[in-house]
Length: 364
Ligand code: NAD
Ligand code: GLY
Image (tube, rainbow, N blue to C red; front, side):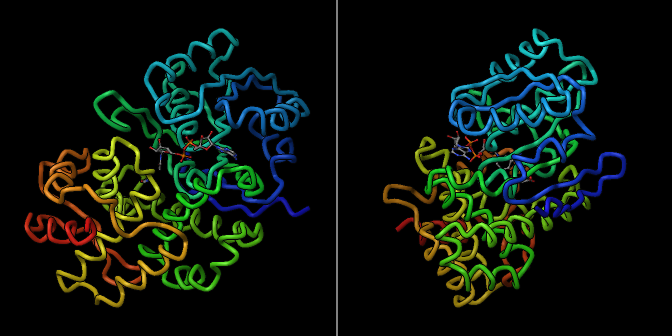
């Protein structure tokens, strides 16, 4: 079995590998030996993932002499709270975790964000490992070190940059992921093509069948490319001083739609609609042709992702919600707009009228 399809996130002394291989979870003893052998590990996972994959992980860790305890929270974004993060830390204390111990996140983005944040705080910072099991977490949240939790006042409002020691991705785990979650993850995959890689975008266009049938070879390849692209961006701008903001393509509009729908519109679908609005705005402001916007939207539609918001959204309200986003610095609107497939710019200070016009067109 070929285990190593390593990529590296280059961050000097905080550099780490991303291992991507179908079936790697069953070989976790081999890939984690350098990190977890004879250490105490707290596995953090949720109520859906625990019965599916935790025993395999525990077995692998036991083989290298790691002692494990676990913290299982009820699945769902509503449990991404400071209380859960504190509970993870308290379980760590009760399980005897010391400064050499590890927290291992086994699950989606909710799990990785909270486990990573707990690791950043526990005894002022201990090591952590990401084992993402959703498409979104494989291609986005497990790489790059953004950790945190929601507050009642909004999403991801507290957190820390805390890089994992290694990311282990087993695309086989996608086989149990609900189809709707795979679909949402594909919005992020399309995002990478739009922001950085036209060739990758074309590859997606030509392989709709493989994307829809969850072809493992193809998924391994595309996850790898997304991680490679994200790793390059993070290596250049770890703390989002500039470039890293391009990863938010579609997200500023998307977050506003998510918020206004009271989170009934799923994140991936909101990002898809957000990318459609961004492309519309780019066409309206002469950055791209209508045909190019249509090319993006055609791919999204083929993947069953929406390019129009459901009825009932008001463009002014979406605009106002965008202005509340923590990323709308100093109240100057800042959006990521395409210049071509595979190239985007961060555009600041657009007039409200032009932005709301583009939103309105996608809210009909
Ligand atoms: P999630 O962790 O809630 O997982 C989605 C659902 O899939 C859950 O019900 C979970 O139990 C289930 N699940 C996970 N893996 C499974 C599997 N293999 N088989 C069956 N069921 C499985 O959510 P998500 O969509 O992975 O992540 C969303 C979160 O990620 C948000 O909180 C968002 O803020 C965060 N995020 C963080 C970053 C970052 O850079 N840190 C980036 C993007 C998103
Ligand atoms: N998901 C955006 C980032 O990691 O910066």
